[in-house]
Image (cartoon, rainbow, N blue to C red; front, side, top):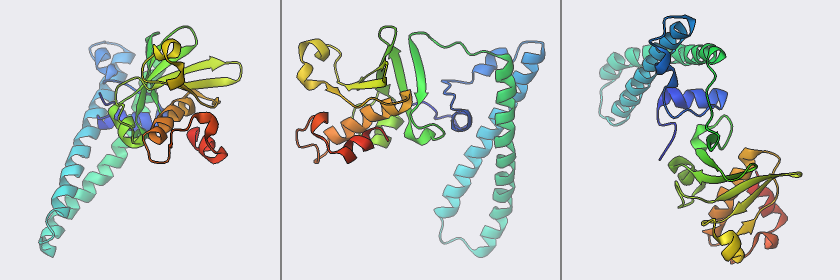
Length: 234
């Protein structure tokens, strides 16, 4: 499972921090009102943005894969690439404008039991955390494939712990099996409290990154250095 593989959704997440699993606006494109008009504009813009992304990706691969191309060949290809770059930049801005206009008229319903969180606001390359409710103030955390790769942990799409709201902030507790909280608390790890949800989720990933590294040395969070503790919540 990996979110934000679609270029338009990735661009939207980078600018707005909204993580969408699909082009939700397409469900409004058949509506004959202002919302439908906005949805159709957004739909066309998203398709155009994705098409130029695919064209540019292919063009760059072809140009870089052919070091033997003559200067004349580059001269024939570059005008098309430069035109596509310009069009891509325009579509990138139009995509966000169209999305924000659509969102002003469409409230996206959040599942009470699951939500999707960009791990690093403004940076989709750090992946997405899937949060599943466990009680009124606790979320179990699962990284998507991109997050697991970005943080260097093997636990893609599997539980890496939970984050719970307390009077002091978000408390991350690392574990791989929720039953360990009661049955084997020695292999669960309470990490420093974070002031926001995203840093708390990143803290879990960084703990498992450390846990699977040579620098772990069988230590608990209480035995980490101040620098290492600060790095967890960075």
